[in-house]
Length: 417
Ligand code: ATP
Ligand code: MG
Image (tube, rainbow, N blue to C red; front, side):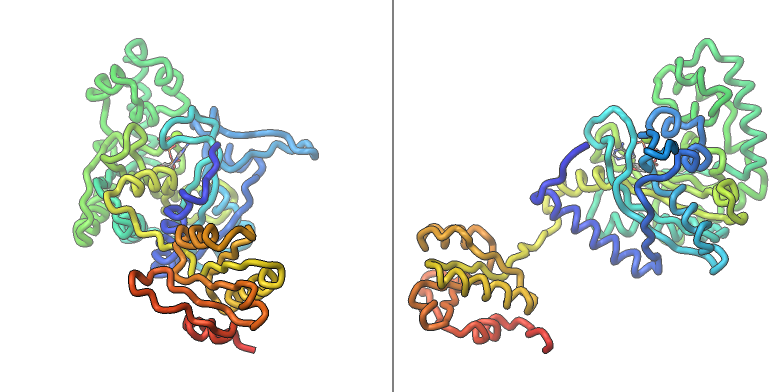
């Protein structure tokens, strides 16, 4: 688990602001759920056979002896909340969430135990265009942030019936080749056979070239739905590559599955993953509700952005740096800083009481455009000397102003009485 320091957070906030704006334009509203849920939610919502539930959860008993889990992902909680608060009876829901997630994984670049996601869930949307709308929101967000080297990988898992049929074929084939599989894949033959397709083991990967393909198990209806998704992506000019091995290993996933990867990330190349999960709402006790969603990994996205040649300009936040010397001046500086903040300016007050020279150095380094100077004489006269920190060479004399005059000079909007 890592600390995020002020220096790094400029980029994080830039992503968050851009994402919020993208969601606003897309009529997607925020939802916030607790970090802690009863374990049962994830066991049912993600599935016992997955790595996340089987190996990665932070689970403990609370003082009431209930088994609790720090959320490893956002979808199950969002669906729980939507069911619990009857949101689904109010019509389709376009929701987004953001925040920390917890998985007990082996930490490495782009993989942490506490990490952050931003995600979108469209609940109550069945048509193929909704799949593409969801994908486009993610794609356009990444494009707007200036991320390069992106690739959209796409697959269809078909309907629940297609999957069940394919699962039988695949299990039979895997059983025939059990001895040639890696140990993890052997364990998954019955518990989560589709996930074997996703194995990173080179021997297993090579062997799988011969396995029955999911695509050939899709019904005509599923195939034409998948074709519709591809046509809509093409119509929007979003390029994609088909990846028949791309699976989301959970039972309730169906039809569209996708990942957005970047060639600029190392081994952890996936920035965003998502898909259709028509079975989940019902599985968690709600009304049958088609849905599609995705989640984006903030750490990996920020890593990408920090590699850009011209990282997104993160504006220096400070307008005014207040310098003072002497006790009476310090009180006036305090009052001035507060007055300016109330008027909407970002203000830092130098509290050191050091020599003016030192304070001015700090003022220069602060990135503020202006410095307000209150020395002993200014304190007696009740005025402030305003200094333009960007003025070069033929510097005009400092202006001596009243606090109100200073506010006016800086063009700040005065608060309403
Ligand atoms: P991976 O195959 O990389 O483990 P995943 O399939 O477990 O990914 P999802 O559950 O789909 O990931 O989560 C969506 C996104 O969240 C991922 O694409 C990734 O960007 C990010 N993510 C997942 N796990 C972590 C982690 N432990 N640390 C940082 N980011 C993560
Ligand atoms: Mg994972």
